[in-house]
Length: 335
Image 1 (cartoon, helix red, strand yellow):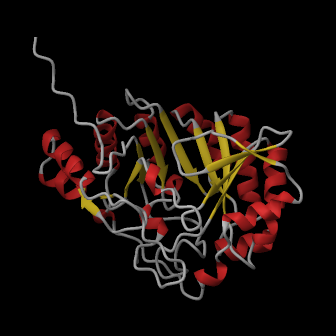
Image 2 (spheres, helix red, strand yellow):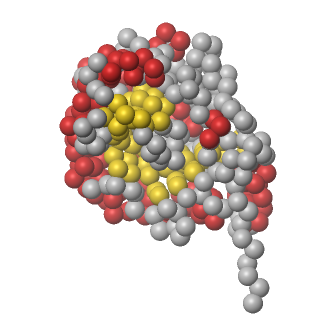
């Protein structure tokens, strides 16, 4: 009996194997974080975004091509109607080793147990401050206690891993890095500090003035914590350190001060169905058009994905000191 031809593997022209797909399932969010989007956002009409069925088809195709890890993002992914049903389907994909989620935490207090049952293994929760007033200022619409309650619900649900993601901005929350690490230690979870990425024009927010490098955060932490470098990897760009005497790891995602492009193993599927080959470039391929013009044609879809890898750039082009060349907002890209 003739064996079916296996799907081609995803290897770019620089020899990097892509085995990690980040999927944005919505551009909508119940927060309006100052570094992510404009205060008065116009969201995409339904016809322009991928349906849940299309997202599943694309995810299954990527898994068939060797993707082992999928991260669901947004916007805030849990505000999309039908998100939980989609997650249940993705959690059953044969060959997928890890289904993970990035969320702002606003829906976790009611959905954590269901997310665990759906097959989510790890959750990243955005939390930039433990000060309620600052939280309101950064998110514009969020309530800190809602997120803290969500973190407690997620801890109770028993996920394999929980991590806080904190974007650190000078003169806004940079004095809180020690407080955030202490909170992570108390909760028995991990934390990653992220240098802001210049995506979209965000009004009065001056990114060059707000930029706070990872080395400065490490310096600030050194006064209160002993950090030991570890080789732990989760498939993403964080470089991890363990807080001595605890089980908490502190990660640093440093696109400006410590470029990590040489080990890039990921691509992004935007809510509009574009396969984005690099967060810091506009190289992309419209998979939605392929999917809708040639429904059920797996050969054409897989070939479009393979061809896309040929234009994956070697590195990003972020420059925190210039107006962003990339005008899409983070909520449209997928965090």
